Amino acid sequence: MIAPRITGRTLLFLLAPGFERATYVSLSKCLEIQGGRVINCSYTAGDTLTSADRRLHVTSDSSFARVAEEQPEQDAVLVVDNVTASATRDDAAALKVIARAWAAGRLVVLVDEATRLAVSAGIAENQTLAAPPPLARELLQAGARLAATPIAVSGNLCTATAQARLSALCEEIVQRLQEREPATT
Image (cartoon, rainbow, N blue to C red; front, top):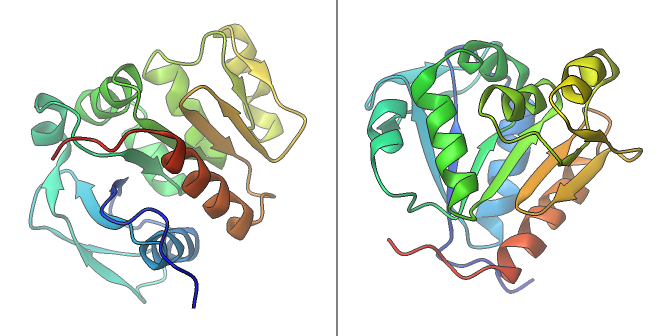
């Protein structure tokens, strides 16, 4: 058995109703096996969120608005599915969670179309981002550079395309968390 490498690290997954189950389950389970503590965050604390395929129900531990007003206490903020990316693109509280975590030096992980949240949160400029081709123009106009690889790390911003192997993305997240001081909770 592999010894956990991120024991006690807090991983805040932003989720919207109808989120895509596969990527969420794969990354959350991988990070939990490594010792991470998954916290789900949505519009309202206590809500039960159902995946798009209706096979998974999770409870929101906190709300975007509540987390946006607190000091960033999580070690990472993750948006890993396109449904959540689309739903939160114009949500001020969700974008504030991302922007404040990034400004505090916390790891921000955006997968596939969620990469555009870097633009919406005002953190894309001068970052190298992995993104699907339809987002290229928007990201370039925001001052970002495009990566030629399916996973890119630019400071404390980690982005990935849908073509990225989730096991490789999980490993990248674990490595980046190991390099950082734990958040104070």
